[in-house]
Length: 68
Length: 488
Image 1: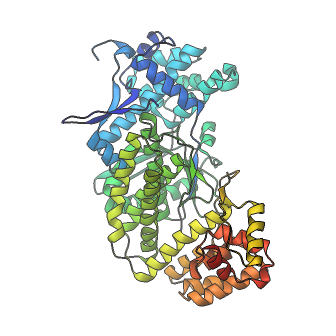
Image 2 (image 1 turned 90 degrees about the vertical axis):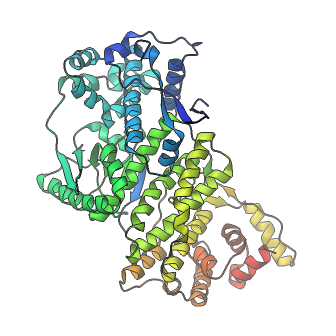
Image 3 (image 1 turned 90 degrees about the horizontal axis):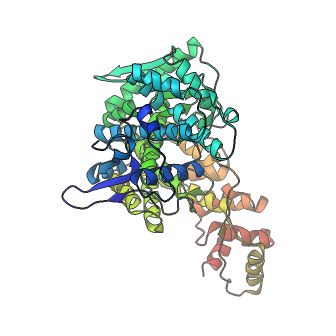
């Protein structure tokens, strides 16, 4: 289970295992080396979770009948 | 970011208040923006992994184009079908496919032809606008779970536009906060072929945030409800990307929205989508049919949330999310609904659950024989437990009783089997007798068993009563007496 943690305190929040790279360019993304298998960084956690999601893809949710 | 590049990236995060509001189906604009950023992050990380795994034709061109015009390339990368392609391509590569077999040309196509002319559907009402692309060309649109229609003709597009304009007036006027979420999340509609067995069908894919596959809706209300429903799936998919909500997402159970056993993750999807549908119907509850939908789904949403919470299979984040969902719907249970509407709505929910049990819970034949033997001897019944069987495929059954209930609420003339007619009229004894007669003719008639349970009472599980009845010479046995014996 690597899916996020909650914090307590005056402003509790939920922190995801997934990192925010939305502000990075493709060039910046491709420039960094891949983490090794023993890497415990946030990036490594994030990529492991991404890989897990690919192995267990969600089925399309089809079939809602909108008319009565 | 203080550290450069990806190593300095921070986790996506939501305040606890924002997360609870998201669970309640009322995310604010900042939360929706965070979800959109998270989905862009997902696409970018997938592209990074693709570029690191194999040759990715087009990647270098996209890098160059992004330097020249970052917003345009970002917009292309954020699109739902880019996510579909990136996930399927990377999966295929990791399973050993060659790049060209896995669809390596997609990125090159994206790099070569960004900004092609596309059809847009737009609407504005009371200062709030929506703009939705019609995605009727990309072959990847077939991955949304339904058969895509061909390219829209001008007449078809005009019909969609007309329906959206009317639906948007309805949504903004009666559910403005949800309309705001819709406008921020919905990127494209994928027209799909109609299903002859349904009167309007739609779908969403976890890989395609903001895309909704939908057949041409019957009317503007159907479009409004369909969009509200499907966009909730997209929102929940984005939450699932960020946070694990289930300890065991595949644990099967009852869903009020499907006839087959559903995994916990699917049950939550149903509850979350119907939270929005229920809210929309609540705003129309002066109309008997909308009141019926409101009464039916408010109860189903709360029941599903209760069962998810009660099963103990949620993570801390899942408990927070589902508790907020339940708290949002719970006060609706106290809102008045006309007694006849409430009766039919409660009956529809009970009917669905009974039929689900009859369809999906199996009694071992040896146990059924043991029950029959004990009945013949006049002994107390042995304890028998039914078992859930996994369904081979998605199931959505037609229900003549539900169709009749809809007709009654519409004020249409009603016609149908005697038991169902008596049931919708509230004539319980007459209905029970009719269902008993049906069972003498066909002891495998699930609809009659469910009808008898609704009107005559079958204290034990209906699947157990039905299994024992079939194991006996059933024409000489009263099923209600048998059920009473089984409950003793």
